[in-house]
Each structure stands twice: as C-alpha cells, then as structure tokens.
Image (spheres, rainbow, N blue to C red):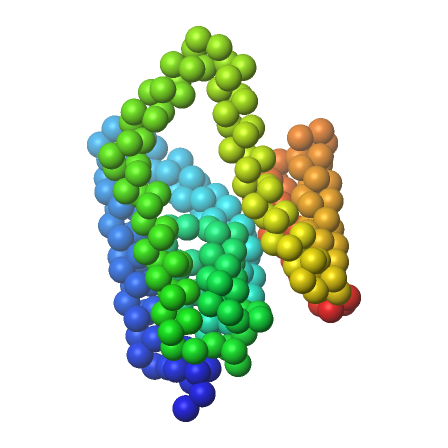
Length: 240
C-alpha cells in the first residue's frame, strides 16, 4: 500500500468526521445558548434571524480561502489531516507554512505524497496539531496580563502601542517573504514563481482594500482574501 492510500484511508476519514462532528455540535450548542440569551434580553427574533443570515453568508464565502488551502495541502498530506486541522483553531496560512517547513526539515524536497514516509507524516501532524496549542495555553495563563500591559502602554504613549503592533505585523510579513527568498537561492525557477504569485496576490489584495476603504465597497470586505488567493493560485497554474 502506498502512502497516499494510508493518508486517505477510511480510518483517517473517520477521525476527520469525529472532529468535524464535534465542532458542529459545539457550534450548534453555543448558537442555541446565544439565541436563548437574546430572547431573555428582549432582542427581536426577526433581528436575530437577520444577524444569523448575514453571519452565514460572511462565514461561508471567506471560507473559500480555507477550502483552497485544503486543496493545496491535499496533494502532500491527503484530505483527512488538513480537513481536521482547518476545522478547528489556526489559520490556513499557518498550516501551509508549518507543514512545508516540517517536510523540508525532514529532508523532503517538496510537500508531496509521493515523497512522504510514515515518520515524516507523523512529524508534520505533530507540528500542525501540538504546536498550535501554544496559543490557547498562552491565552489561558498570560493573555489577561499581556492585554493589561498593552493597554497601559497605549494610555501612557500610544506611539509605542502602535509600534508594537506594527512590529508584530512586519515580523509576520517577513516570515511569509522568507520562504520564497530561500527557495530562490535553492531553486531559482521555483523561487521566482513563488515571488510572482505572492506579488500578484498582494496587488489584488491592495486593489480590493482600496475599493473597500476609498470606494466604500463594503460588501467586498469579506471576499478580499479568497479573491487574492484564487487569482494568485490561477497565476501559479498558468506559469507553473
């Protein structure tokens, strides 16, 4: 049995179904509690129904970006593992970087099932699942104190608060830029493709943001990331 059959086995799909079912039940549970709380507070049921409808639309449509991430990772990890990860906390950007970094650290030339071994697959699964727990654990024990310090900093001198947030954002951007730049040094052909795709997606995102901010096209706000990813992946398909 090749590893593709293992990664997409019935057992893995059952694990994915259990995770998805748990998340669905949890979501329905809190939705019902929120509805009952709204009724107790005297909120108009018609208004809550409109909120639910708008929330459904603005939840499903941006999820196209997550679906694209699932499709991208399916070629390297199968469907069930990315399905499980993208059904819970985390982000599609983190999962792609984490999986690719773990694969390259294990010596794989690229994240594809034909190169995968059980040991590498297990390592990638640990990086994608266990390491993401650092965020919730930090929030449980340190978030309150961290937010308090940030608020105090902003009250004393808001310039420092903006500087901290901007620094964190630029650190994230540099992380995304790092992989294509490293790839250019290792494989110039593939590296320039990655850079072109990233530049295209960034340009599309900037145009969408301009339309939202300057042209007041607020309906586009929830579609910006999916549109950028779709066009970026389309460019990759044409030039790849």
